[in-house]
Length: 285
Ligand SMILES: [Zn+2]
Image 1 (cartoon, rainbow, N blue to C red):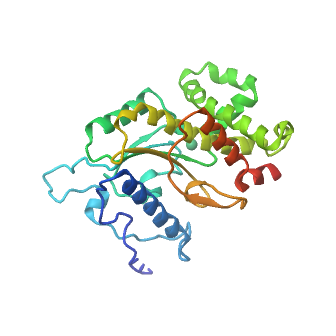
Image 2: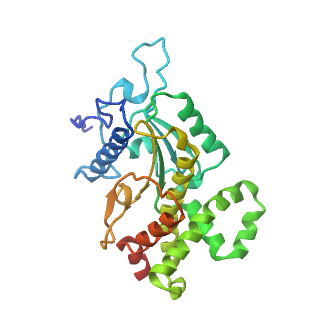
Image 3: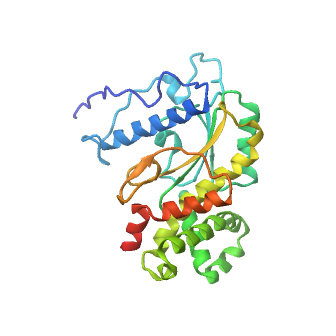
């Protein structure tokens, strides 16, 4: 039996786990995601090999005191998709206890998801950030795009109220994305074979932005330097949380950014994202 070497790479959690500002909390999540991206890029990494990561007890939620429950002191609340490929603590390189997690298909804003975040904002004094994290190739967004493109398929969804609630929540982002693609590439673009894929990915981004916008309005009276609302999209291929950037189809800029403040900013964001290399490459396929 081959003995595996102990990886000297420290675990994802850093020393400074309780940021004082929203900007610092944001940076911790981006640093954690960078750690996760680099972990997968190491030459010894492959799906068939174990990768040993050094963690201490606190990283996996075990208290120093065996008779005490760990303190509940997350520094960020994350609204993410239920998709099994996007485990938030891993993707953001954070330890157990760092994130107040709400996961729902399509990371949509609803009564229960916003209610959960409302609890965190109101009751957890450690909280510095609310982050909406979507992901590429989201199947909840795909179902909404299909309902948008084919009204007949929406009738099947309409009879299933729980699923319909999710699809209905996403449809505004899909409509906005469709408008942005038309403005950027012309009316005929809807006939292109890559149109559905482009519409799904652009809808993912705008759904994140619109969801974050809802949260920003909901908690507006509490926001400032010690609490902010941001969003980003996890790219399933590169594993980077951010947004596409520039003409390179593979360029994904690491970022967590503030949502648009009004309708004009949503439209401008949609148009800008529709002309990135990532989206235009899907339309060229
Ligand atoms: Zn998803």
